[in-house]
Length: 283
Ligand SMILES: [Zn+2]
Ligand SMILES: [Zn+2]
Image 1 (cartoon, protein in one colour):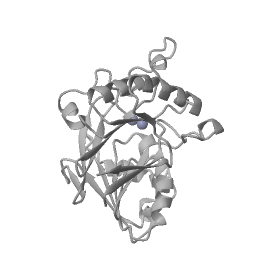
Image 2 (cartoon, helix red, strand yellow; image 1 turned 120 degrees about the vertical axis):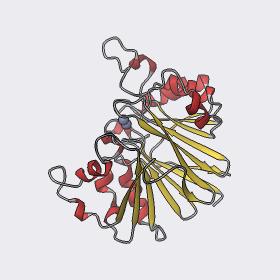
Image 3 (cartoon, rainbow, N blue to C red; image 1 turned 45 degrees about the vertical axis):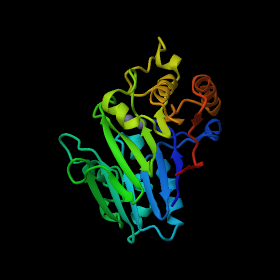
């Protein structure tokens, strides 16, 4: 219980990739699994959650899984129909997201299981699946156990409906997960209060600065940050460690390693998120 383990099961943005040039850091889309004592929870359900599900199925004592969604863009939910614990009738699975105007988010999730997108049908889900909406059916923090809480803050800098930034508090340690944000001006105000002095900041780093500003195919306005934005936020927020995350699916392992070199010139304690690598935060 004195450590919080976290494993990146998907580190890509936009769509999954499979090719030998992506083997080192991985090709699955966003999913991050946390484990402390006998509690397991997950942030985002991109294709990475499929392998997270395989891992969870091998553990005998897990009966409840909390899945926190940052938003409903398809790269963050597309793994759900292939998440094995959903087909285990002993399992209770709680999904969390923010309120979208005009529709219930569970309807969008169920559409992944129903015709014509899938032959499974939502009736094929055997687990006790429940949906929670922040500000409506649940408030933050969500208590995982006596020493672990999940907080969130809505950021509107991602098209079109915004995104949740999550912060996991473990004793007095903090891990911030800030993906799908275009942080041109850096964190300010309540974002700064929420993130400042985190032990670990996992930050959207989809693009290099030159690709972001490219004349022929600029990426500005797509809702994603550059490595430079991530580094600048890490410095301003006085975080201990920065993980680059949500890589462009066009970027090879080699390009990611060059991004890391570039980042470390300004912030030495920068790391690349790597699929299946176990990381630990000790109290
Ligand atoms: Zn994304
Ligand atoms: Zn997105």
